[in-house]
Length: 91
Figure 1: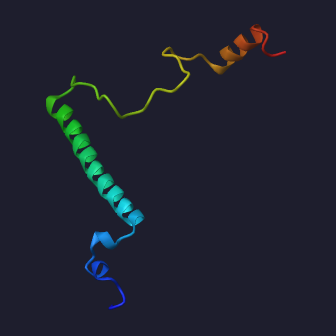
Figure 2 (figure 1 turned 135 degrees about the vertical axis):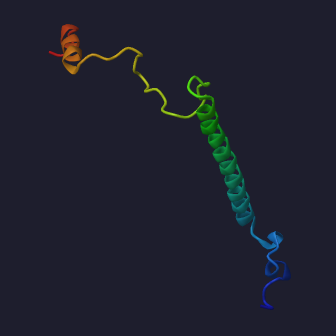
Figure 3 (figure 1 turned 30 degrees about the vertical axis):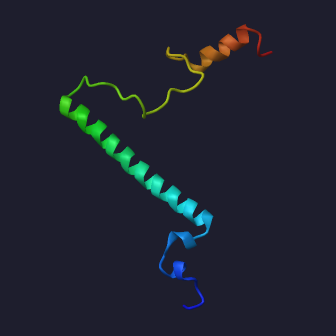
């Protein structure tokens, strides 16, 4: 063990390569943010259950609306095909 520098024997972060320090900092930040997100999500699920129905809607999360679809209910496939044929799109 005498061939290793003293700062690396003690586990000092100064002896770590810069990419290892950056990776460790990223892991710590990710862990911290995950804990905050889980705490926030836990508080949001408990609050509406305690207040009953009619609580405020969640601002984030859930399914995003499909792109390109209108709010009205879509017709059947046969209706769409007939419309396409009537418009001359199929010959």
